[in-house]
Length: 71
View 1 (cartoon, rainbow, N blue to C red):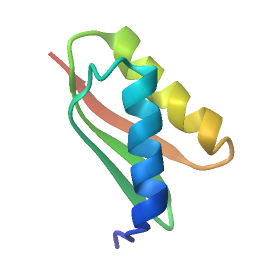
View 2 (tube, rainbow, N blue to C red):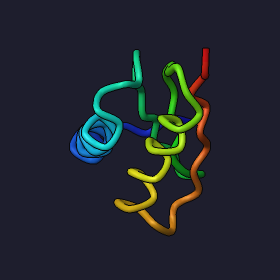
View 3 (cartoon, rainbow, N blue to C red):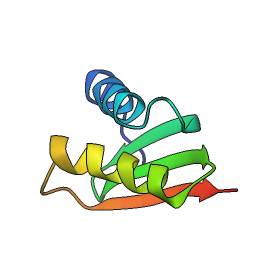
């Protein structure tokens, strides 16, 4: 079940975009009772890690799945 907390989701998307220099294409943040899922595409594993770090700084105790594809 996906929950929609528009303000939190928007804030997380903004944090990721700023931290990665907007280098994640088609960024999507999904929130659920189980945690946060990051989705999108980037060209390097470094940017994927930056996106994850941005969410960790905002929500350090949340379960996080990083499904960003590197291509």
